[in-house]
Amino acid sequence: MSTSIPYNPKTAALLVIDMQEIFRNDATDIIPNVQSLVKSCHEKGVPVFWTQHGHRNPEFDGGALGRWRSQTSLDTLDFIIKSKTRYDAFYKTELNSLLISLGIETLIISGVRTNLCCETTARRGFDKNYDIVFIKDATATENQKMHEATLLNMEYGWAKIVTAIDVIEWLAHIGKT
Image (cartoon, rainbow, N blue to C red; front, side):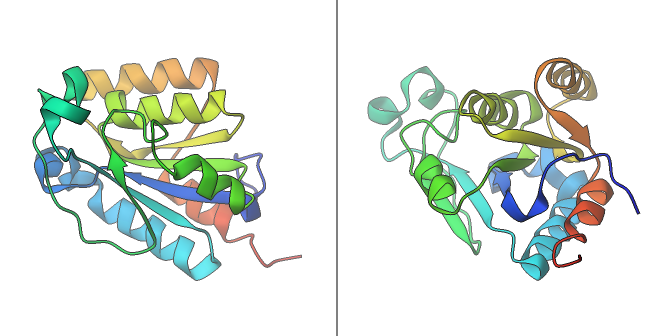
């Protein structure tokens, strides 16, 4: 079976962006797809990185964004990036050094909010020379218009827009000759 993702799945990592209680209303519809993706990654040995947006002290480490968001908690497995204080998961976190140490070349983006943290992290990843696979049915935001506008912009310039099933089928090629 052929897939539309042109990158090597053996050098990919899944980023699950900010699947936190504060964003539950945005994330409800994508939870089953994110769960399926995480399961597939675990089965194939693909690293999974979970980000948590939060602040030790929003007035100190949050900048303008810190005044907009409140601190939340997250119980997950795999690599957890808890030092994320901006939309960009690379900003002052250990994410890039971990990805480099694992030989990651492709970022698979899922989570919330499509037009904020997911897009900003994907764009920054692209600027850092990662190939970007953005999952349209495993990302979500406050409304469909913002979600679709983000997908349109990313597909035009720098991301491969796919479905969760596309990624699961692509990952199935790991270990096959």
